Length: 477
Image (tube, rainbow, N blue to C red; front, side, top):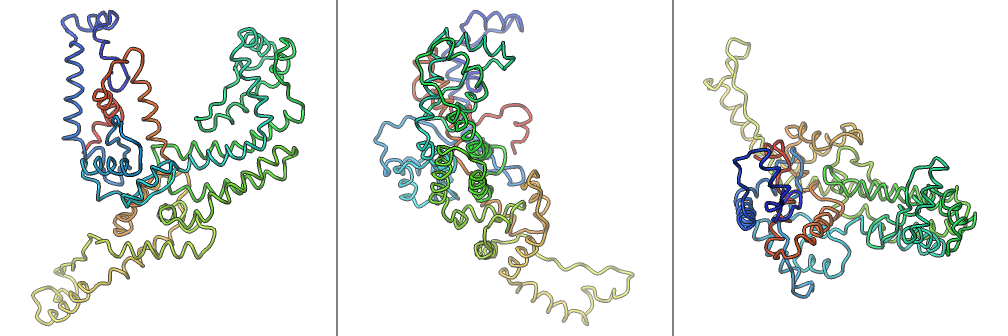
């Protein structure tokens, strides 16, 4: 409860908790706050000593787990050199400093430079990139958005306005919803504000007129613009949500979804009627052309897409990029041991040709020649054959799990399956770490305002890494 549900240590002293414990077991004596705090520290030490396998190294066919390696107070200047030193220290503590495939971060200059200083492969967070694309484009319709913000703030500020809006919605048999506010630091919040605003359009117009609210009213054309902007921004929200998940592969989708966003936005031109919405579309297309320029040529994204059986060559806009990607994969696969040596089958007695067994001196010369050819097998040729056979298989439906597909095909593609485990572990966004950052705000609250950094570090770590139920504990190797 302390680590998983963010309950304070003082819960063991609360009257309600004591009564609840007594009702369950009258003989149970809850531990003291100090003993409970020490228990959390002990669990952290045990977890670090015994559970690194759970956090960092599950077989690929069981999925790629997401684990937090550390969380601590950083009081030094956030320079690239200081950040690089801390990142290397954490990675070395867990023994993964030489195993980093790719490091994905937001677009902050100091963080990006720190990754380059270390020498790790870097990938920018696509969710941050999409957020920048949308925020830049919304400047084209800022006057209209400002009017919507004024009205939304009025309903959040005025109890009279909020109550009247609620009554009007009930009279019009609409859902009782108060318009959502825009928050600059939250992705898609402007879209959610516009969507909730347009959903209560008639009730809002009526309420603003009746209450004589001191806000600027939207014209009919501006209402149309808001509706069209919701339609335009919806695909960006869908892509952001899809790529922010933690339970399935995301990086392999980036190229496909980026191209889909560009095509969908371009198609909206035909149905857009207002100049403001057209300006948003123009800005979105220009920004995506710049930020997504040759995204399919990014080696990390290209190789993850190529190794996803749902996409393969179809992820690429041209055959040249696809050929180059699969050539790199063939070269990399050739350097990997297949781990499946070919063994000569023993002869079966009683059948025709039984004399070809190991005891025949006549057949011994042939056996020696075959053994020589097996030892001299060309790994490059084997890798090329695996890639060719992989490409000839039909595409997996997009709703299927590619990891299960690879689990079943591992004996068929021994080299590619090992290469896949090194590539498909990459994620598309830094949202998982952002979620952990948000949880920290729930840990440090009014009831837990005196927590020391050491305790916060332990609670954040355990909340992120402890198995949530018995089933998950049983998965631990």
